[in-house]
Image (cartoon, rainbow, N blue to C red; front, side, top):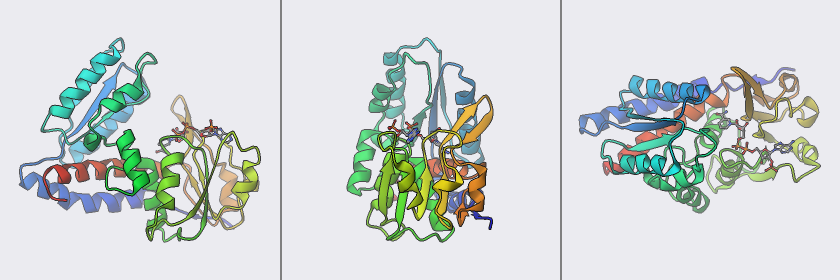
Length: 287
Ligand SMILES: NC(=O)c1ccc[n+]([C@@H]2O[C@H](COP(=O)([O-])OP(=O)(O)OC[C@H]3O[C@@H](n4cnc5c(N)ncnc54)[C@H](OP(=O)(O)O)[C@@H]3O)[C@@H](O)[C@H]2O)c1
């Protein structure tokens, strides 16, 4: 039996369809949403990601001011650039593309971002808001995963979600998000990591298994309960080749699965723009 595919594209399209009129309303009020991007150095994949986000911003009719800093810039100089964007009224949200040069203290840079302009939802204030169930930008990949499950009618409430990985971008925020008391969440969540030698036993008990480790091919068919839902978020790049955590053979065991390409990625981008529009609406007093 082959699993039902859950591509992220249609989910992202639905999010953008919802954002379109909201962006038009902001523009009509003279408050065109502005997403600032900061790129440090010339790392090719980082430059590609930033260019893609700027293209999407333009396509949606948003401003996309860009700051490109040389690779030998200091952490203090990056923080100064962030402070200028914090103070710029035309900027509703920003991202500092990661990874960058190893000498940059990215934690310090993230701390300098105004939490209300933190489009990635990774500032400690926003992680705290998420933990407390307060409104604010939610980390984009976890929000996209919840959107995928909702879009395809996968019940989450009351079910057992096992997340492989406790990283700050996916595993940890997703565990908080899916355990919240809301109709599209409300799950029993288990998080496994390198400190859990029998992680595979936990994985096999999952109704919904989320791979967020960044270890190519880690999730094999024997880790999936027949008929379970499998979401592949973890990936590693070798050059331009994308290597997902979830092995292709899992498609023969799972009931529902995200495709290895075009799964979680498109919804991550869509949620970034949802965070931008929500930030612009908050600043305009519309929400
Ligand atoms: N698809 C997307 O749009 C998207 C967006 C962002 C990130 N990603 C990808 O998602 C992955 C996770 O990112 P992240 O930043 O959340 O996490 P991360 O910081 O890369 O951490 C990886 C997590 O996986 C766990 N892990 C690694 N190897 C393991 C193993 N053999 N057994 C059990 N657990 C293992 C680690 O455990 P320990 O904590 O014990 O070390 C850690 O908690 C990365 O591959 C990243 O590239 C994808």
